[in-house]
Length: 432
Image (cartoon, rainbow, N blue to C red; front, side):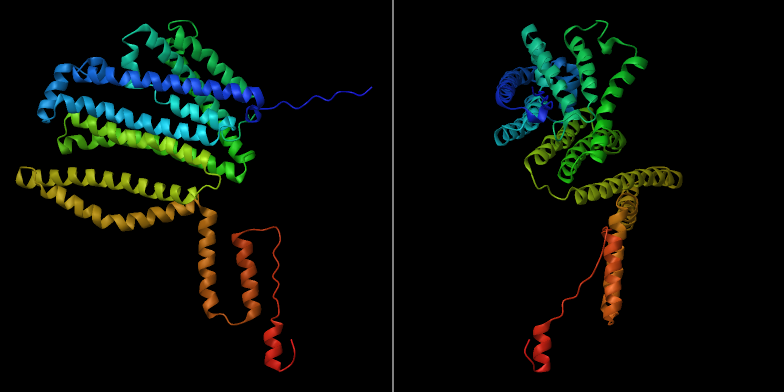
C-alpha cells in the first residue's frame, strides 16, 4: 500500500485551466463595466463644469466665473479642458491595461496588473464621482469598482512581480485590509469603517498596513527576486516615486511662485492639473514597461539622472527664490521701491551655478548611492592611464588581474595568454 503524497500548493502565479479562464472572464467583465461607466460619466461631467456646478469644480460658482473673466477664458474652455485632461489619463491607463491583457493573457500576474491599471481611472475620478451623485445605482457601481481597484492594488503590493506572497504570511494582511475596506465602502459609519475612527487610531492602522506592503517588496527585492525581477521592481518603484514627488513638488512650487508670477487661482488649478496628470501618467507607462519588456532597459542610468536633475532643480529653485527676496529687500532699502533687476540678477546667478552644482551633485550621488560603480569607474580610468605608459607585460598582467578583482569581485581570477604560434613560426622562418 503506497502512501499518497500531497501536491504542493500552487500560488496565484500558477493559476491554470478553469481558474485562469474564470480570471480572464472576470477581468474582461470588470474592464468593460469600468469603461462603460467612465464613458457615461464624461458627458455628465462636462455639463456640470459647463454650468459651473460646485460638485464638478470644487469651488463657489461665482468665484470660478470671476476667475474665468479675469483670465479671459470662456466657460466652454474650462469645461472642455477638465474633460480632455481626464480622458487623456483614462486613455493611457486603458490602453496600457488592454495591451497587457492582450499580450499576456495566460499570465495571472499580468492580468492583475492590467485590471489594476484600468480600475485606476475610476478610483477618485472626478467624472465618475459626479456621475455617482446623480443616481444611487451609479454610486453603488462606483463604490464596487473602487473597492475592487483597492483590492487589486493591495494584491499587486504583495504579489508583484512573480505572483507569490513573500513572506507567505502577508496573505493575512491582505485579508485584514479587505475585511476593513468592505464595510468602509458599503457600510459607512459602521464600527469597522476606519474613516470614522479617531485620526490617532485610523491613520496609523491604514498606513501601517500599506507600509507592510512596501516592507514586503523590500524583503522580496533583497532576498528572493532574480535580476530580471529586480529590474521590474525598479521600473515600478521609479514610476511611483517620480509621480509622488512630482505631485508634491507641483503643489509646493505652485505655492512658492504664485505670488511672484501673479497667477490667479484658476490658472493655478489648470496648470497644476496638467502637470500632475503628466506625472501620474508615468505610473501606467512604467508599469507597462516592467510587464511587457522581458529584457528591460538599464533603469539605473535613468534613476541616476533623475536624482541628479531633480535635486538640482530643487536647489536652484530655492536659490532663485531666496535671491529674488534678498535682492528685492536690497533695492527696497536703497531706492525705496522694487526693481525688475532682481529677477534678471537672480537668473544670471542660476545660470552661473548650474554647471558647478550639477557636477557636485553628480559626484555626491555616485559616491553615496552608486559606490561600487563609482569605484569601478575610477579604477578603470586609473588603469587606462597606466596602460598608455606601461611596457612590461608582467606588470600589465598583474594590473589587469587586480582591476578585474577590484571592479567585478569574482570568486577566482586567472589570466591565460595564448602564444601566437603562426606569427612566431613566420618570424623564425620555420613551420608553425
